Image (cartoon, rainbow, N blue to C red):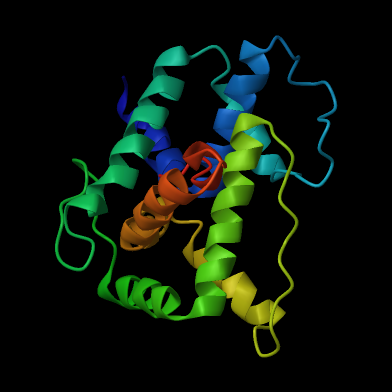
Length: 194
């Protein structure tokens, strides 16, 4: 892989919106859907520059596979120690202290956590081609600007991975509770958690 391709892989793996577009496109191709066909979900409109950039690597399976693998490594990195130091995959800078503090603040805020879980659910739905969950009604005081800042923060795969690692014990506890007490399969509750 050339240096330019390696930089592309890193840039795309670090951006949740780009990863969503890549995974969605790979799924469409696997299902035999032409990329130029209109998507069934008209609420998802990727950035035009991302679509153009993705088209440039059409047919380069090695780059797509490398991006998916790096994304997987990034999402697993903070699981080792979400409240402390952990190492990122090679050549990837760690999340800055300011961003880590913003993720921790979002973790402590029920409204921001709920919005994060909505973002994660939406991305996963888009990636696997299932119906989107409607956006929950925001409580007063949780305005559009706050949501936009959160969405920008969690567009970074490292921030998303850290928040998911912080929430992992709660997700596991909820899954275990469902296994014991309910007829709902835990896989539905944990819908594609990281």
